[in-house]
Image 1 (cartoon, rainbow, N blue to C red):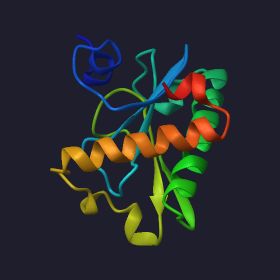
Image 2: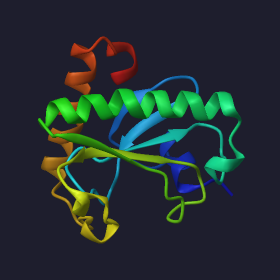
Image 3: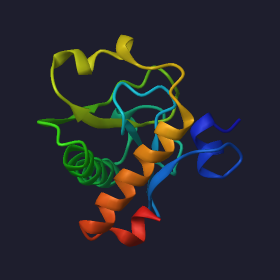
Image 4: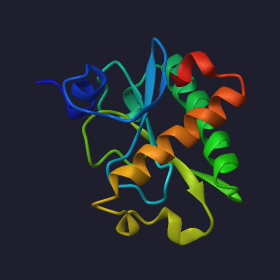
Length: 140
């Protein structure tokens, strides 16, 4: 059975995508710790980051870094967080989002019901920053 992330990638479930390439996608978390909280997910179903081929993990990290730079810039944050937890969905994913302090690393601070308009605005803000930074092809 396909993971929920595969179903989002395949368009069976909605997702607010900010990145698409042949190996990975980036879409907003449905329970963001901070606005702009993006999941970087391989198209290939891999359960844990330790099972990923090195080349794919390198690619995912590079995409997460690029998105991290964009969210940091878009929200004028001092840091971009990067977390690989892997307990929520059995499909490798990297969390990246703007961060201001250590509380921003606590999943207990996630918003379980974010406002839909705020989510749309956050996705557009990331896409616009990615486009400005030379990633228009991946951001749309």
